[in-house]
Amino acid sequence: MYQYSDRISYSEVDANLNLTYYNLVNYMQDCSCFHSDDVGVGVHYLAPLNLGWFVTTYEIHINRLPKYMERIKISTYPYQVRGMMARRVYVIESEEDGELLIYADSLWVLMNLESLHPARLNDKIIEAYPLDDAKPDFKFDRSKLQYRDEGELVGKFKVNENHIDTNGHMNNSFYIDVTRRYLPKEDFSQITVNYKKAALLFDELDVYLVELEKGYQVVLKKDDEVYTIVEYK
Image (cartoon, rainbow, N blue to C red; front, side, top):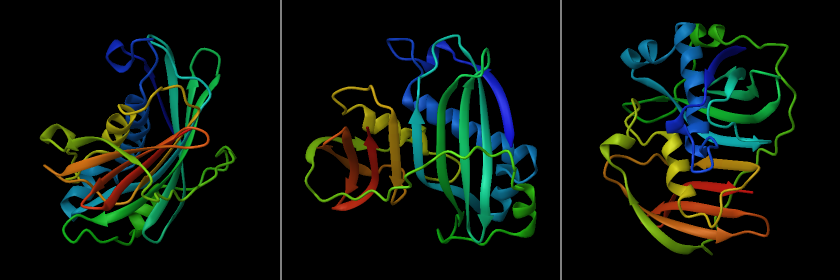
């Protein structure tokens, strides 16, 4: 387990002083990066090897969004670290009383950044992420999202320089930032993301909105190819 503490800043909240979905994902991502670099297998280790972690799924459960000035603890528990993949559980709690605010599951694939093919984890990476017996046992759906071309075209989006991360594609948190703009509301208790294909610099993506029986699905496509599906429920 890896954990760090922080305080919600004004630049991270919406008009109601709640942490935005975009910054929520950034907290989880930062926790992963801090963890990996602190144990010696982060971006400084991976970059010279032309390797990088690509997230393929998030399943985020929200009990309550933290508020401006609230102090929080962010924890991550890696597990099933083997082959070419690894999973992580995230927990965000109130630092004051331990209230469980958010918990999430994720699946990551180690990629060769030149070939863009999955790469096998070496022993150093595997040994850096031992299984923690204290990993919380949350129930996750692990749904594989499907888009059946029934959505309404609601906008277009172009990937710019500020969206690109060290892996050379649009950072995963920006997919949340883009898709949530097209939601009729933003009061959800679960966000599920399936990343199908990485968006690159200057890609122009079509945005489709599907109203579900409960919640909404927002899909990013280019030339009829699905890049990302996000469900808000």
